[in-house]
Image (cartoon, rainbow, N blue to C red; front, side):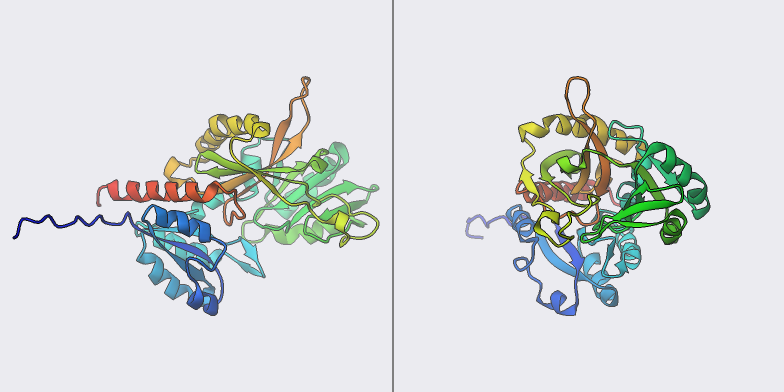
Length: 359
């Protein structure tokens, strides 16, 4: 030895994959730069975390499995329902990968606890809850829904898993035997039909252990929806959007400019107008949800969001908030501050994984 000190080589914190759906060409051509998650890749690289794209399709499951088994963690962006596909095979793959010690965000079991509409019923007694009911069978739906609709006014029905407004309906009684219904999917128009026919149309929602959640229609819906973005148990930003779903289109038709939703305006977590909601989410509602659903801190998704509608104002004129959905499977677009927080939380998960004793 000549007395010179060799430079130390700092090991990388770990390797993670970012997974989303695509075809074989997309898998072959994917890089860290040529996709909408590029900011997340940049923030991961800034922390010296090795990250790679993982493009999934059912016919490439074996390749994706081998790739994920070579990683320490996986961040997943795949809708529950998209172009006629679901997540059944992917969820089985992710459970298999997670069983080997790879952390998965969000894990399919966590999605089934907090990322389905049933959570609205399970957490109905928290501060974000409302008059929410659950139907687990077509028989219960046929027996319980008509009298509730008659006495409680317009209702919103939601199938347990879905996105983009699929299986979400506003229902109001038109006469003793007919209802006026409006699907939440973009471009839908109101229809009037026999209540029996509409309920029969909903019966497929009970397949594969499905259910239907029933909430009151929120009359302040025209005031817009607040999307509260969460990095694990902390707020990382907000989005406010004037939506058209479940609001009848104007006479010009569903494709007229007035019938289209407004842009989602993003705000940082520090936005003054949302501080009351932020405090509720961080100090009350999220901890209460975790306790109720038996979700520990390490199992919380690295990125998720809760969609709120404005409820009635109290006697002092302060807003209340009603939870209408939690999104876990595919949360995007995200506030500008979120990619850095995703990377920070990924680093924490990697460090926690390395700190666990081998078994």
